[in-house]
Every structure is written in C-alpha cells, then in structure tokens.
Image (cartoon, rainbow, N blue to C red; front, side, top):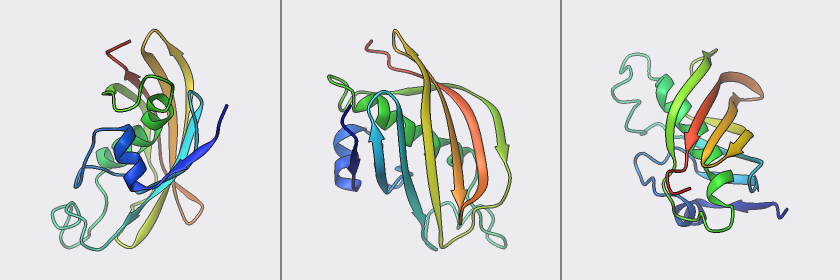
Length: 146
C-alpha cells in the first residue's frame, strides 16, 4: 500500500470541507484504508476562539472530534474511486477530553480504521499537544455511495 502525505491543497482534492470548517492543515502519513496522521495549527485568530470562551479561549470539544473525523476520512477517501466523495459521521463513543487546547497550539491527530465493510467504517483517533493526550474518541463513518 502506498503511504503518502497531503498539504492543504491536496486535502482539498480528497474531501469537501472548506475554511473555516476544515480542521486539518497537513496529513503527514496516509495509508489508504488503514490510517491517517497529521496536524492542525491553532492560530490565535481561529473563529471559535473568539466565542468559546472569550475570557478563556479553547477549542470546542466537538470540533476536536470533527478534526479526528476529517483526518480519518482521508484514509477512506484515498482509496481508489473515493476521491472527493462525501463521508458522514454517524456516531461517536468513548469520547474523552483530557486537556484544553488553547490558541497557538499544534494539535497532532492520529487515526486508524478498525473495520471497513460495505461503506460502514469503524474508527478511532487521538489528539495530542506537545506529546500529551488531549482528546480521544471512537467513531463510525458512512460512505453513502458504497
């Protein structure tokens, strides 16, 4: 299986999220059908820091999960015939938010596919800041075209 990486321009080719909702900047290691790793640089001016919470800005928990989902989706969308298709989140379980993610952090994301059958994908992912676990979740995706 070919392992490859994608910058933001490449990410745009594979999936349909766009700014400001694209929550990944770089995919450093994609193994199609298996896993995806990369990161999001959280700049001071991210739209959500202005509203969550102005006196204590941090990345909302569900956006953390969305970042994991977007990264993991690349491992499905990079399979032959899936480039540019839509992938939907159907459920998330065993969600843990361990530490706040604050402005000027780099959120490292590591995801893997546990099962992929008939368009149903069972996944898991973790988020790390400075090598410390900040969030994790198990989640299910669906590729409705399959």
